[in-house]
Image (cartoon, rainbow, N blue to C red):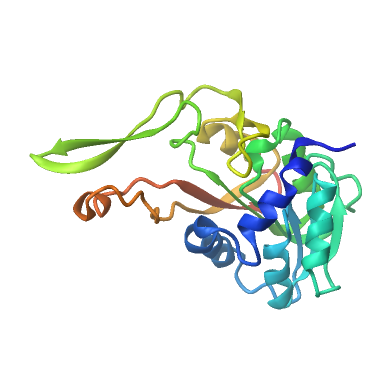
Length: 251
């Protein structure tokens, strides 16, 4: 059965291409690769892989890659793009990982997709099961301080009489689901599940996934209608990238 992400497959593939969009190339993906380290010979699951551009990059670095997505249409596009037949592409929901054996991956990566997952607890439980002891779960998402809904608008202000940029934030502590037009195609609605940062940490801890590193990279690509002096004052991250290690008996 087709889902809303199938409707977005062509738009997503066009925007991401073979290396990701501007924010992935310049802000998000470098942090993921840094946290993954040397992946040669590592077994990696790229969960919610989209058109597979990161899976192919990891494979070129010597990783043994499995890549999956909920959209059969985007997996079809990923396989068409892939000249590398070493990658195993699968279609399934990110919270349904029953097809993978226990302790089967060194690294699981979820790149800008966990906010689409309704049952995050089930997904984290599955990831903890399929990771090898000491394995890493690396995931990126929009910074909880910067929700799309309600919008976190830019605002000019002053500190010590100096002009500076601020972010106006509302609704941070509210766990909620919001449905709105996708940035990939405004005619298709998607549902995003918002949680404060502490909730992510709580779920990770529940499943013995200990946060070992967190990167809040400086944002790039601010709207150019702001004067340069104000743009360089920006110190609020747009994205957050976390690495959690599977350990015994965290709680």
